[in-house]
Image 1 (tube, rainbow, N blue to C red):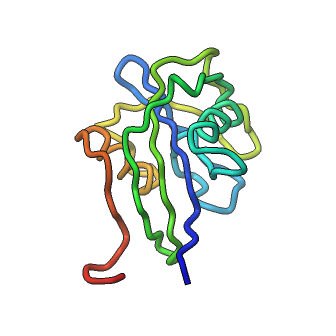
Image 2: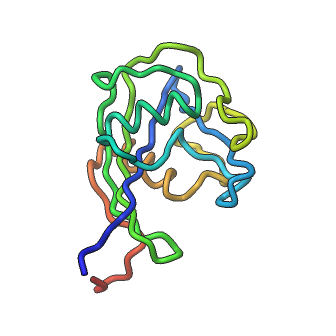
Length: 147
């Protein structure tokens, strides 16, 4: 049977050498941890999804033409589910980031990408690290020799 991975998008918003992270709360998954503005692709392409998620989560409008893919990850999460993560940077956006989903987010904070807090969601931290190294693709979570 063909794999049916979830397709995720993560948006790296950078300002003055720091990136924006949101603290998860009330979601039932990774609450108390920090992640990029992110979400699942719905009935749209990955670029449209990234722009939508940035607007929904942190209230900024990003023209899809301002989004640039910087890393793609094939990730097998600890629960054994496959995910394809698309990491984008935005060259510019309209609006000041704010917590647009207070029921799901405890707050926003800016961090140096090379010194992420220990409570950053590993999936996001890995993608950011690969982006900083200029690596366009990675595979994580799979055991050596597994299919």
